[in-house]
Length: 294
Image 1: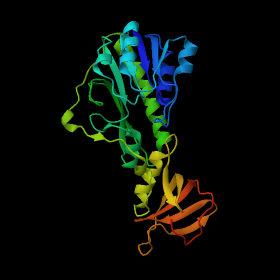
Image 2: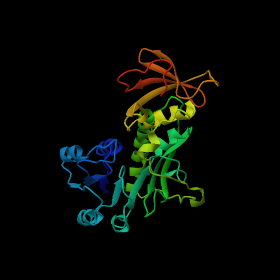
Image 3: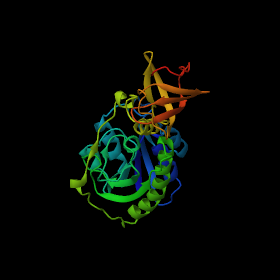
Image 4: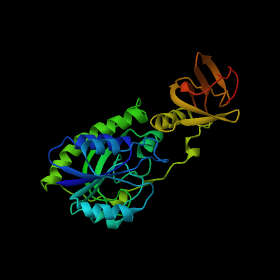
């Protein structure tokens, strides 16, 4: 089975490296980028392709006509598209006779759309999923090919959930690739009536307002921590990144949100709109004093 692989993030790199070890397929081409201003976890696939002697096509924007022309010359049986910021048009989707396989780390048909790992953590979900599906012209709306549910633990953050999802996906893609090569795969249509779409996040979504509850701020921080851009607060007109927090048990209802209750070394304890939060990892150059307000 001849495969072309499209991607440009850390997840793409890990999956492609894994696929190169499988005997059922021949990877005949890779589509990737040399840089990306929009992917915090950007990772070019060029080093893997070059090492394996695979032809590589680079694109800087969304010129799908050029990509389609290149793909038609290769004549792949299937295209894997994992970690790509644009929907593929019908011209590309119709090229491989099996189809284009997409990936979405969410429990489709629920939670289609943008930033699924970040939204799942920011909203405090306890479950997500790792889902491979046949792409159509919609966003994450094609038939499901392989789906595994994943528990989100209270201790998970963006990095640990990213790793957990990747480990699950590698197991799935091994099975799915064998099923595709032997023409034994099963298509499960999505129940579109159960679908919702997460929107694209913007910078203001990552700004902490101390009137939020401690739990909401904690979820925001763990959602945006590395490999992503980090949640931030504004202090003395400076943008301060907050990377790790801890929710503390006592609430102090007669104290205003944003007041610093205690400073212990580099850790800062702050009253929130509901509850108390400890900042464990942050980028304050000078630690504000107890009694000050953020």
